[in-house]
Length: 359
Image (cartoon, rainbow, N blue to C red; front, side, top):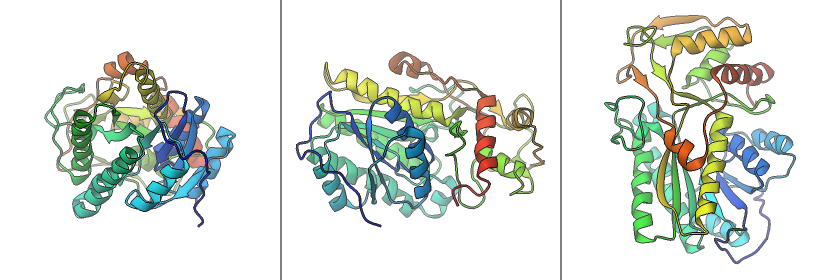
């Protein structure tokens, strides 16, 4: 595939009138939804993705929804030479960094792969940004950076400790960003700690498209409903929760995407008065939903039957895990607006229209 770039200016700057954003991993699930919201908010988007866990069809559909062509570069964040070329050819205000491996189980089996891609790849990107004087950065982090013993709802001051290489890789990048802003106060960095993204664009054109058996609950539910999978296995029915199943904080991917726009807007606002430094912000609904509650909500809102089987707990799973989203409301002016019903309806709309995803 030919690399597509658009020559603009070779003079990079952090001026507040520049609306061009590089979105690494922008063809992926969260990245594609964020591109739509960025364009709707008046930002110009350039997507950089190695397509290792995404499908170019998602970008084509994103362009259709947004009503705008999106410049695309097929490349890896470990390819420093190509990154320099991209920054030479575009005048970016900042970067939203989604490019990362994300399967917890795989990270345990292949830790070196995760540290190389998620940590080294981010270091390469930050070095290129610094060389081109582009110092505005929104990082796709995760609530997995929080220590498991923390009590829900978890706020941003909670202790951080990870049990998987995936979580460790996110936490390492946060430490890097914290040190970076101390060494160079011109940086503005926001680390968005997600809880459990679910749902799809209401058009049904783009959504979560896992390869193989889904690791996440909502695509598993919808694939059972559409007949791709036989039944849902629910791990654990004896937790200290409302119905014995695990409780988590599910957030609609469109709300999540809008949170990234709000983070960029915060950085833009601060460019008038000085750099932001480092801010860690939870993105979640601030309340928990059990596995069985989610299954029942899906069945009621979609009129589909979801067969399930209660099985033994998985090692390390905890009763309840959800966030405090007050900082996002106060600092970003953002809060989750879409409901569990919206998440279920939009997930089913996507799955029913695309039973095999983008393939």
